[in-house]
Amino acid sequence: MGLALARKAVALGAIVHVIGRSQERLDAARLSIGDIVTHRADIGVEADVEALAVNIPHVDHLVCTAADLAFKPFAGTSNEDIERMLGGKFWGPIYLVRHLTKRLAKDGSVTFFSGAAAYKAIPGASIVAALNASLEGLARTLALELAPIRVNVISPGVVDSPVWDFLPGDARADTLGAIGAALPRGRVGTVDELADAGLFAISNGFMTGSVLQIDGGNNA
Image 1 (cartoon, rainbow, N blue to C red):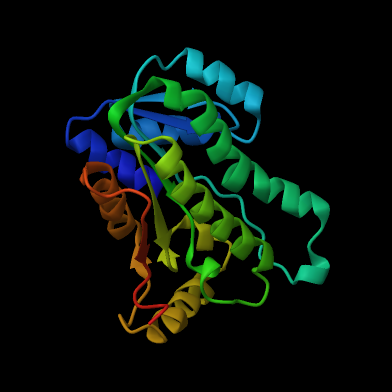
Image 2 (cartoon, one colour):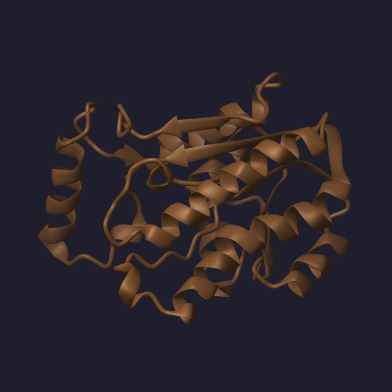
């Protein structure tokens, strides 16, 4: 979703900075998109974000799509699993806001990506649900504290993205097909549809403190 959003933003003429932990994936993003600025950093490590902020003097719009999630039964979820999830999904947004909003334009915005698990209980997603819900609560309060900077959240449902690549062959298509068939929309989402939602949150100057659910009717 982040890669698709970066691609669309570049196509609109934006100067896009992409942050990631993997140099290999950053290089692939540059080859795929072209004219982007990449930064190797772990946003779950405050020192990394603090150093990053020094190299980015001005920001119009800050978007965080990071997630390193583990779907396991609560009893089988270790502290290490939770700490890893907290890094990208919770601490990352906090550190980015702490160090980069000083460089944000007053008519700029912050957009977080949460997820449908915050609204619909799914076995094995207890920590994911808690993180998504906490991110949305954080955004609503920041919309007041950072005003006039706008702060919003995109809440995706199930999306056909590389996160499902761990499933072999037909199992991937069958799983996504079954999930999609249970939705009012009749299919799962695409990364481009979520990227479009991200662009809407960035560009709509009257939207703040909002959570935009793009989930195919998952909560209908």
